[in-house]
Image 1: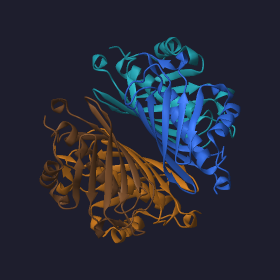
Image 2 (image 1 turned 60 degrees about the horizontal axis):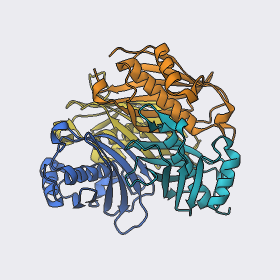
Image 3 (image 1 turned 90 degrees about the horizontal axis):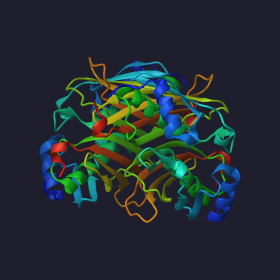
Image 4 (image 1 turned 180 degrees about the vertical axis):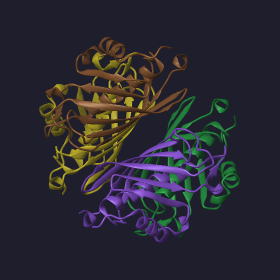
Length: 140
Length: 140
Length: 140
Length: 140
């Protein structure tokens, strides 16, 4: 399969997940890392004025999905088997940026970790480790 | 503090998370366990016709949030510090039911695990372990 | 393959892991659950007079290994891909008992969770979730 | 409290965990990262000729324990609350080196991740995320 560019991944996300259109943007993806941004939106807030956990979990999951497309090509039926996230600091009401790093690219399993920061901040507000199972037909 | 009933928790969820109103229902909460249902909605689907991972992660997180309210009372500033989820089987396009079980009720940390099933199915489609940090003012 | 009994698994553990002989005993294994005991030994203590984390992690890992042998037969090259453990209470200086419960038996991945208690206690001192990868040749 | 040097931490490990003496060495610790080495020993082998999972789990746990001592000083009663590890590749029969990175230094919780490699290899054979609870008396 042909590795996908960030633009191609964004086009797929817009088509495959219309409810999220515009909110999630893949800014970079190069087979060993990927960076995604989720635009700030008041509907993500939870009591305490902070962004919700599910927003960050979905972002981490999507960043690794994008990383996989950039590494092995279009494999939309790849599915998350495990996601573990630590919430480290309350994010500001601002865009969130996720940086995914490839840890393992096996035939059947891909593992990556993800640091999530508020735009303009150095300290991470969450760190996730995500495992995807890659269906046989789509492994090179 | 006074432990909350399922009805009281539902009223808080409807007020605090208006975007989710109607989708998530606490069906039972008794200080050591809690059961939540999320109503099936096509917007939760992902490629492959299955319910999205973030839907299940949010459900697991909410089920433990409800469990905490039923155990220690209203502590809305309790925050998730860690969530780890294994996706076990693809859920059907149906309501999802989460059963949370209290594992530890410490002064500062509450730990619970959650089994998620499709309504009418025996086999679990996901299993999560969730840790919340309880702010000092709200511990009994 | 033929599912193994607890006695057969104990014989393999004694031969394959001679360093542990006598310490770890599989007390029960029936394809969907397994119970293992690790005998108390002062060398497991850490500062504070409590049993070490690695002792409990190794016990959880072994309990799921035994569960797999009882479910699918002898597959010694099955390997742990993920282990996540929450330490809930300090264990007493006593035997530890691990109860593993099968969550998923897939072709390639087996997932189980494990509750660890001190002998004679009700409250769990640790809860783990363990994923094993099963090599192709050994799946039925 | 006074942050500890690698030499001071090694002296404490030798005294507090006599069973491990000589096997585990803290090579570097600077408050935001720590590097530990565990010397190769045939007793760590498991079927398949690979190093055992518990060996790597114990190493990850110790690397973060050392990192905490270098960050906040001597706090031996700090305890692991959560450890999650992904096994990525089979390690060679060689020394293992763990690199811990501080993710969060809170008043009550410290979170770090750890990459474990075989000596002389680039690819990681395991990645862990470890949370410690720091007892109140020892926080600065």
